[in-house]
Length: 165
Image 1: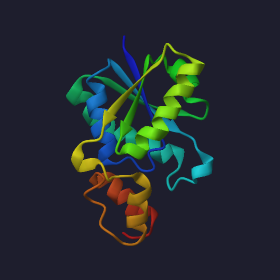
Image 2: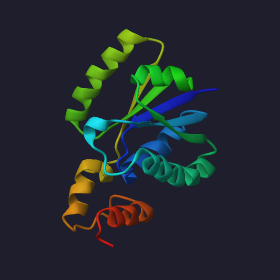
Image 3: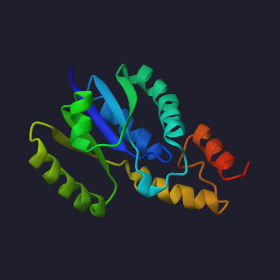
Image 4: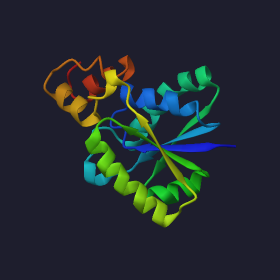
């Protein structure tokens, strides 16, 4: 069984993330969405809320693609998370050259830790390249419309969390 790991903070999950998840699910039999517990980033949504949003959004995708998609919180090294879930590949989405520079360094470190786990880069679809969770949160905080960047469920969660409902 081919198992892939797509890690991130997903605070919140965006349509850009969902596009990568959909495309990655066509490459593996099981896709694990690694939800990073990153206290340094000070997430807007709790770990439980982020996992719930991912599970809700991915349930539809799993049915569409026939690929098992599960959320898995983690706080250890990415390569250790890959071992924990039995992943042979790590999936990373790229939006721009600056993403590649950072990801290139990460691949090198992960390969030094375990060269049996491959990293696969998926370029963000052109229409999703500007979407970043950090920017979505900033726009939402300033009363901007983020409905083009997130699903209706996530849009409602943002409005509720920010008291904009």
